[in-house]
Length: 121
Picture (cartoon, rainbow, N blue to C red):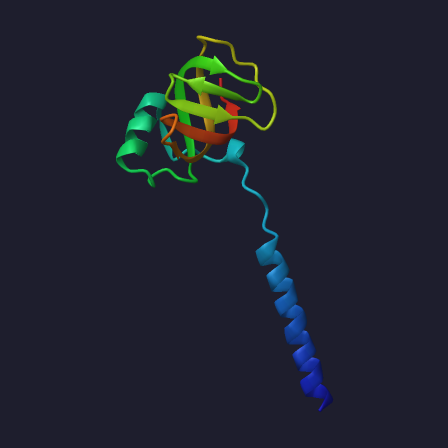
């Protein structure tokens, strides 16, 4: 009887450890990931409008001219909004290349939205 209890206890411990590692995975590091798509902001917008799910939750690198600046976000070519976790050093009419995670297309503002963005140049 005690060997069954010991075996059951060990199985329970192993399941708890496995569940812990499954639930608490490391977060993605977008800045160090390779981009699955590299092009201009306008080309990414056209691609996403044609196939909305193609780049969802994927790391993309886009280039364009800064057309609007906010505290923690910038707009490239009026086609893409990039959100930063910390501030940025971008200036209006500056040519930039950004990398970030594509979170989708905003139908209201007609822009592609990236989060966890970093400036590559």
